Length: 238
Image 1: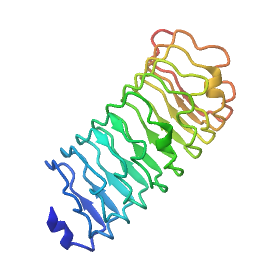
Image 2: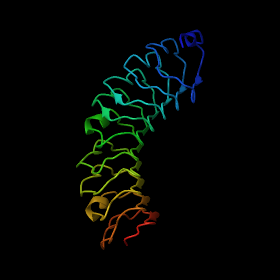
Image 3: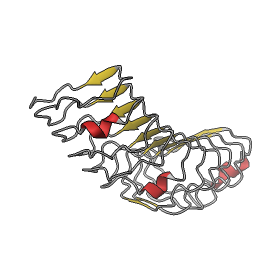
Image 4: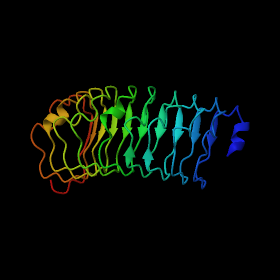
């Protein structure tokens, strides 16, 4: 609503659970002090590189539970200070490699429960050197290509629950030396590559429940010397 432009002192805006279908371009052009914007659980179908112009102070943007299907180049570039971006429960199937350009301070990214069929292009993650938590569960990823996360050197939490994963290769988690929490539960995994997990030397919590394991090989968790919590519940074939 253009009337928002008259409230230049706003620091917090919650428009969640309405029936918003669009956000007119430059709606937030005069909201230089907004720090949190909640637009979750609406019916927003499109956002562009002009949607968030003016939101240079925003640290939290919540778009969860909308109908967004594509993210194009520069969509979030105006969000210079964004730390948490929630895009979960949408219909996102296409991500431009430069969709997140400029998000150097982003720490938490939710892309869970969308229409992704592959892990996003590694080029995308190069724009997020500060990313600490990444949620990709409830997509139909099936596999993780080699080095998919290699640029996320500071990632501490990776959620891949319910992502239809069938296998994990020896270099699926290459570069994740700081990872503390890994959730691979509710997938279709039938085996674990000991090499694939062995390099996660700081891993403290590993969730592998509700998979199709027939056997877990000796040495599957070799190298995980910091592991404090292991969940393999509901693996009915073991």
